[in-house]
Length: 134
Figure 1 (spheres, rainbow, N blue to C red):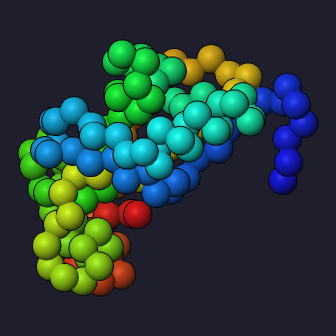
Figure 2 (cartoon, rainbow, N blue to C red; figure 1 turned 180 degrees about the vertical axis):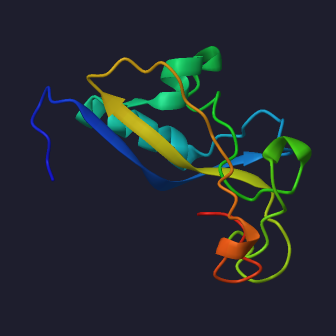
């Protein structure tokens, strides 16, 4: 659905940002694709990226405040087991911490943002290796 110019808008999803982290606590290495996407969303649609709007952007770099949204390693700060199925494409190795997801918005005051690891309870898993909502 298309929003009219000036309408309030929130768009959230997997944008394949390919933002890398050397560890769950490391600073992001923002891909050229991610920088271009953030710029295009701003210039063409007037949409701001939520983590930058709430946390600020270090040196004006978009997504410099984002955190990993998948490829969980099982670190205590992540609140769950290592992610082994969807992230690894079945090869059994994690791809490292990544952020592919983003929230863009306009017409709202962004107050808070959080990247939560959405761990599935063991009883709710469709397969034992599917540990997180993707």
